[in-house]
Amino acid sequence: MVQELNRPFISVFLALSVLILSSCASRVSTVQSDTAKPIKNSEGYLLLGLSSNMYLEYIVIDGESKIMFTKDDVRYNSNYLFTALPAGDYRIKSVKTGKYTGYSLLGDIWSFSVAPGTISYVGDFQAKRSQWGDDILIVNRSSYAYEFMKDHFPSLLKKHSIDYTGKREDRFFDLIHKGEKSNNDETFVGKGVTK
Image (cartoon, rainbow, N blue to C red; front, side):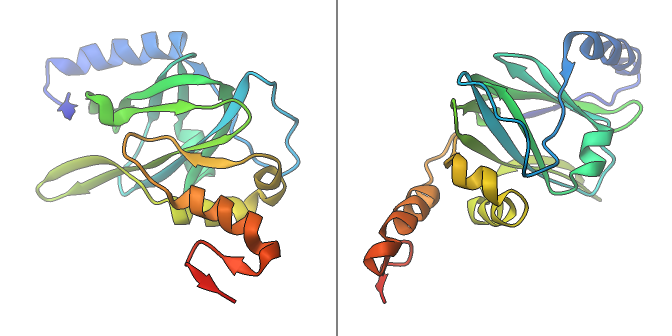
């Protein structure tokens, strides 16, 4: 569920919220190189897809630690936000889409976890503006996330398994892991076809 906050009397509240959120949420550094420094045993990686046709000021994620992806992160990582975080449970809490507009994101669909030593793909955060209003969704696109990691971070992908940790069940990464392990046996489990 998405709660719209674009009423005139809310604009003052949003301006104050930005100041409060900025002071409470830590700005994280996105991973920009496949040779990133090793993570601690108590950390994992967050991989969040991003697709938007509207301006995004920030995205706030709350949980084990409270973090904020700013407009600079969104601009640099046009398709994915990828960062190291302490392992634990998180949820996408809010998004600011303009000077006086923003959304509080309610419900369990925005919850996910980051597992220690793994890459936790949580889905693609989609913010779309249309003539009928704004839609904010989280969509599972595991195969695209896997291709992104393979193309941009192959070394990290070899060192850390990737798993979907969103709310719905997805076996794509399980099949990929099994397919990679059985490649030596000349069987590609991901498609169920024997070579």
